[in-house]
Image (cartoon, rainbow, N blue to C red; front, side, top):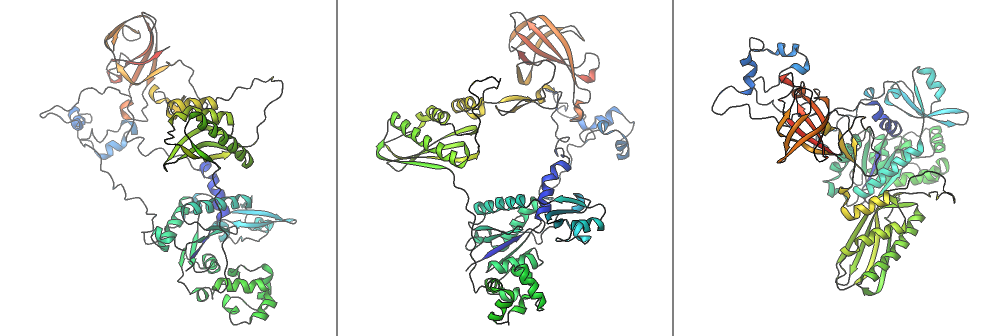
Length: 603
């Protein structure tokens, strides 16, 4: 029994354009826990402020110190600036109440009773929007936003007429090629994730052959709800219908009026009887002829003889009617995901020596490069599969930081890892597959006389080092927007370009956490230390520079409101140079406890 689903995206051109412009219009929201769970600058909070065996609780400090002379009310706290309001712990509470973690989450797995409404367009585009395409000497509307539809702007209307009706109309060019490319991507995703048979249906939907697959998703209703929820998260409005024929599913999805329509087998003729003739996907000439004869609904065609019907409306009308009712087959031509590039060598005799294995790998790489060049692709990952005579498959993979099809580079990386291959009693077949690839066009080799100062590509070097030491061992340091040193650096890809480095000097090596110093001798408040002990070794300072004052980031945590660090660059006997800091400015006690820490080393 065949079951076909038709997916209809009524606002695909408009919603796809909206999705492309969404990052530019919506500000990036800060993390939900940016203020509730800050990263304190204080690296050594000291001893616990709660004494054992009684005493004041930390939360009672507000009442004990008598900051307001009485117990503060909610109005007192709300009158203070946000950065001066006491925390819940200072008000005597250990923590704030928490909402149920799954209370605000909406189900997208089909268990909910009704589908949530589509997002409001007023929040995205306040002005009506239409897409137009050139037809002869005038622009014709091909798609309109819901706001434009409410104002009476329909597809097929002239753009000049629409501008005369609506003064603040936003007119944009239609992009049918981009819409078709998006549908092709969705069909490929469906073929990989939902059903093997998926096809593009015009410029506004897809067809799915669900025969024998819906039980994997909990039934047809469950599958439809999951699909609509998936598209809603992408920002698309959709309707879906499931029937026994593609024609009936196509008609019910577009003219049924419900988000989900599930039609029982054998009821196609009765279900589509009251739908307009346009639901049969007829040609415009056939629709004009039907209107001339007074035919408006599909049920009007049922009692008509086939011969007169074919002469008046065309033979295609009869075929569409029979396909919708199930008396004529309508095949669905599925999209076929592109297979990963793969080459194979079957050996006459099993091999096991390193030389013979290296020779076969060389031949496989040569064949793979030819295949990649033919398809215009570059490999990001290459997998070697060696089938042994005992039935076990040995796998060996290499990766590239950039798409490549350089045979010398690929052979060199396989040579670095060939020792990990265990031939056992012998290898009888070897395969090379490219599970991850990217488009790679032709590249200019350069002139015969090199006169430019073009830098060499370090991607091959990065690949070889990554093959030896591991991918995680290679990285570059880049900056992050923060004044606190341990927050101002982050790891990036070895091929990324670090940006935004500060103008002031920073040590080559920065400790993950500052380490405390002991027996520090220093003259307060603006002099570097003369002596200190770090990791059990005593150092005598012969030169120093500073201080460089860094304040805490009060917008991250109230604890950093008055926090201060004074950094010094010092040189000890023997030439070692360190980066030290003192907590506090040496004047105000609120800024720090005047303890010293080691944070980095120069050179």
